[in-house]
Image 1 (tube, rainbow, N blue to C red):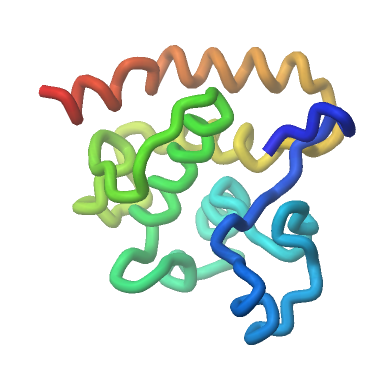
Image 2 (cartoon, rainbow, N blue to C red; image 1 turned 180 degrees about the vertical axis):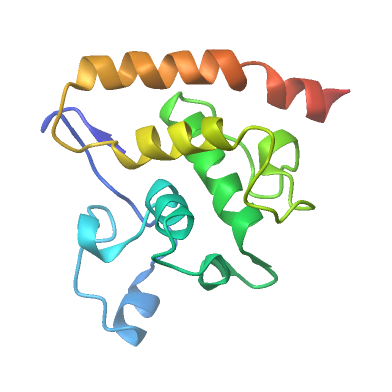
Length: 150
């Protein structure tokens, strides 16, 4: 979430209600999650690609592994471009039926992961925004409508 008054991105976990925060002894504000308390999809992708983590350790219920991580990298890029989709949307690079890490577009996913993981970090934000937008326009713009509405 962008906090205009602070001119910064913050991580938000909208699913953590008061009951869950108490039951899991979560002490941070779920509307401003510290960067070291949550692994974003881009970080998870790079951790797994570099062998620092097991892709099957990332997921929820029956969805886990490379396809889960890849789908969330794409969702993050879409969200950072103000395009929100549903968790069960299943098209292109977010398709749940392909659990292989190496797709025809692995370099594209690597770039998406790097840019999405950099959201809110220090750096040239104007350049980051241009790069993120260019990646979206080249690989994702209009794609959800084609797959969902046809």
